[in-house]
Length: 602
Image (cartoon, rainbow, N blue to C red; front, side):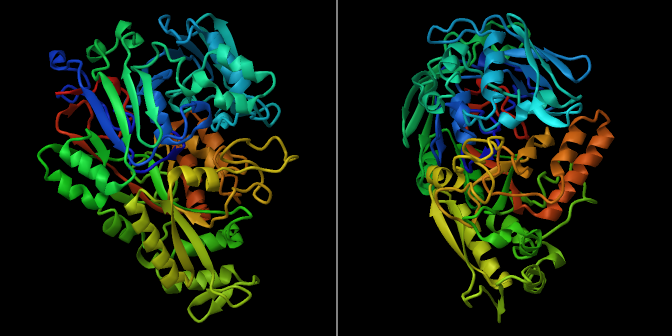
């Protein structure tokens, strides 16, 4: 399940890490020998981090998403060729503005909540996703608002139930890419009977702690597996769903006839990299993410297949522009100067061993929306080095207390500027990148950078989660990832830079990354205020049916992003995953794991 934030080196449950067309050997995606698939065995994967929660309303990380997705399919998936694969339902539209959603008639909730109906969806959308203020803290709430051309204001997208199993979504403007956006792609639902207990009083704490949500008791026949056990920081197990609805649906590929094909799936949380890789090598686990510097060794093992695929997550330096970070990061000129400080080609070739591409903006270079003529390059060729960095940084800091004393950048007290950079304690490769960035900042910018290791849960709770004082404008996005204006809303702990979260670039639907570049965006824990109206370009591109014009507008938007340098763009790493040679179903191309229910053991 693609979320805004990506955790590194997470194999996750089968298919949930973004690997998995699952063809039968002929490359068509259709099974050429269904008889070779049989139900049996426990698929065990290794993850470096645990999930944050099983309550998907309050999460935005890929690991938690994969835990939940094993038990809840969502409304539809996307095939690698950008075709919709209906799961819980399908859609129809005549004009790209009004979308009618049709649910299947064999969808049953668990815990006694009966059949899933359109009423469940409309109630959830209007009272949770579109609630003002966003009392539940749902991180993707901004997806359910659009600018109304008549009022010029962002308003909730009108949603109306039209039948027991149908509802309409009436966009204010045409958006032909709407079905491919995360707003409905793999979108899940919760029974009205659970939500209405908390809506009237806007009881966020009660909603977050609801036992049926946190034990996935309501999932019924809606996913390939059902929740079994979760031993925190140890293992998560789901069991084959004997009532899985997709086995009773006509028109789906025949490989779903007995899906899923594992009796159980288990994620083992193994934070130590050497232990995790040892478990893959010995056959204790069936899949694990492999760091680039270890890939060659695993490619030579007879019992492991190494799968290298492009993926949509961006490796970058996040600058803290809130009041508990280094204030000069708020200056575009400072961020641009620092873009000359780090050799990106060294990151790609020496640290990531070639299993990555240089990143310059919020799209991979292989994307349809990347325009070389618009994107400004940093950290490569003659746009890298000490002279290039110091000259620009000195100019950018003119008139402030900061300046150079020899080769050191010092503050008003004559002390060298010292900044922190955080990385995931379970990811040695991240630690290597942090150390390289520290070395480059020291040699090229005269800044002393101190790498700090922290666990993923601690970083999210103490450094990402923002909260604002009472009285803050309620129009700001409430919740974990952007609690208010940068001068008043801060995280519990101060920090300057981090590299332990990767952001989704959404190559299928690039406008979905808009929330990273808005003051009030759903993901802006770092307090970035753009100088240019990047979101307006996103919105214009979204509402344009002319594909060539869409490319021009997105090209311009990603050019502005490269110019403003909201992040220190570094690389687009490939997904390097090791699978036991008996695992079948995944394919070696960028896709969404749309048919991971059909993975199996040979």
